[in-house]
Every structure is written in structure tokens, then in C-alpha cells.
Length: 151
Ligand code: RB5
Image (tube, rainbow, N blue to C red):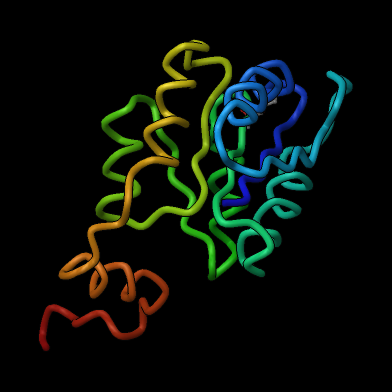
């Protein structure tokens, strides 16, 4: 499994910690940067990582900014990406099990290191349940097909 990580300046330190965690697993780990804490714009890194996941060059992604919000907004502009902002192991588990999320977003200014490690561990270990959830996930990119109140 190829797992790719990226952050902005607010998330560089946590990204290093999570890289170390992931490197201790069987996964192949790609760190897309940044590699220092100089100020950068989070969408640049969100789009870079989302392109890797969308193309299939990476199986899963981890995005970190201050809150995780900007990263998730930008990554979710890519139709092949389902980015989930997770604050705990439960949301990480459900993001995989029910939503088939392929990118997890974490806020380095709101989530402590050990919770972030739990989130990532659960995210990479939990399978998608499929079944009725496949139907729902398939509808995410099709707003025009959602029934109206009248239909
Ligand atoms: C950077 O200061 C901050 O805005 C960014 O890390 C992130 O939280 C945006 O959503």
C-alpha cells in the first residue's frame, strides 16, 4: 500500500511524526512536503496530494494543516477524492467503513500527537464495508441525480 502525506507549515511537525509511524508499517510512504516550517499555502499541497490519490499513484493520503479544514475543502474538489476531517479514532473508522474515504485530514492545532497517531493507524487498517454504503458513496459526486422534494 502506498500512503502519501502532505501538510502546510502548521502541520510539518505532526507530519514527520506520522511519517515515522507509517514507516514502521508495511506501507510505502511518500512525503510530498513541505520539509520545513516556512509559510506555504495549504491548497498547493492539498491539490498535489489529491492528484496522487486520484490517479491511483497512491492508495491513501494524509493531509495536515492547522485545523484540517482548508486541506479537506481543497482535496474534495477532486472528484476521485473523498477527504475526511477526523478528530478521533471513531470518525477515522467510520470514514473508511461507511464513506470509503481515501484521504484523512487532521488539524495539528486541534488534535494531539497520540490521537493523530490513532487516527492514522485506524484509517489505514479499516476496510470499506461496501454493500449499501457503495450506493451512497456513488451518489456523492452526483448532486444532479438527488431526488427533489416533489419526486
Ligand atoms: C494556516 O495559518 C492555517 O490557516 C491553515 O493551517 C489551516 O488551518 C487552514 O485551514
